Amino acid sequence: MSGGSIRIENTSMVLQYSTAALYYLSWMMDSHPANLSAANRVWLFKGYGNNVISVYETVEDMKRGIQSASITLPYNWAGTGHVVYKGNLYFQRLKTQNILKYDIQKMALMAENHMKDVGSGNTCSYGWGGYTTTDFAVDEYGLWLVYGNRSNNCNLVIAKINPDTLNVEKSWETTTDIRKVGNTFMKCGVLYATNSYNAQSNYIRYTYDTNTGKQETLSSNKISFKQPGTYNTMLDYNPHDGLLYYADSRDGYIATFPIVLSV
Image (cartoon, rainbow, N blue to C red; front, side):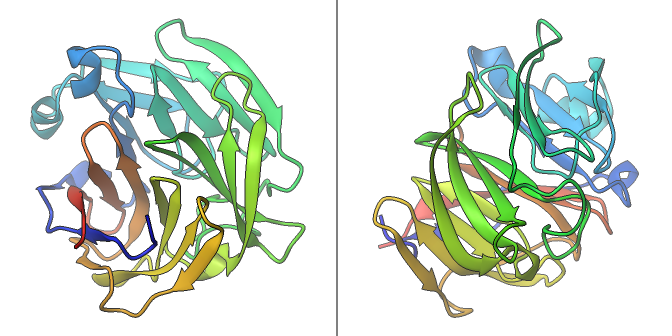
């Protein structure tokens, strides 16, 4: 699969979640759910340095404000690049270089790993800041960690992560500075980086294919999409439903975009 072989469709769901405005929101559903109820459950994270997760049983419940649970983590998360994968939450611990695996059902920390090239603050983060030094991702190939390498000019690193131990199985160095992209996501082993976090008419500016080692800078009309808001704080692909999850801080929008293969 080459870097330019996807198309981001128009939004399949848009919600102006007013209470999310100015909260630096991220939200997600399990990328590899165990059952239907797990597949429908929504996890909502407010802030880039908080430790309380709001849980909704469905998207409709979230729209109505019907919250089923509130989970308090033992540590604050950093940034907005968390994922829920097979019932576990993966996140970076605030103001540390450590990544964590937390079993949501057991409410227990399952693994922690120190990443020496990951920053503990805002030095190597996405353009908007917010402690977004690391960004977990899940695609058809499993669990990834994308981060700015503080030992190499903040260039993006793509690391394949063992979901049990959090050890790096393999990594790929890129030549793109994390501070100069809006956000990233993974699909089929390909990294996609957006041009901006605050432009409504956005596009994928850079791709790196871990299958081939090929990296490419794309023109603005190659893989374009229109953001509903003007301050994107989170962008993640979910291989279970094939949707790209989006959150905006300034206007409180959350949205999903279908991703399809282009011909």
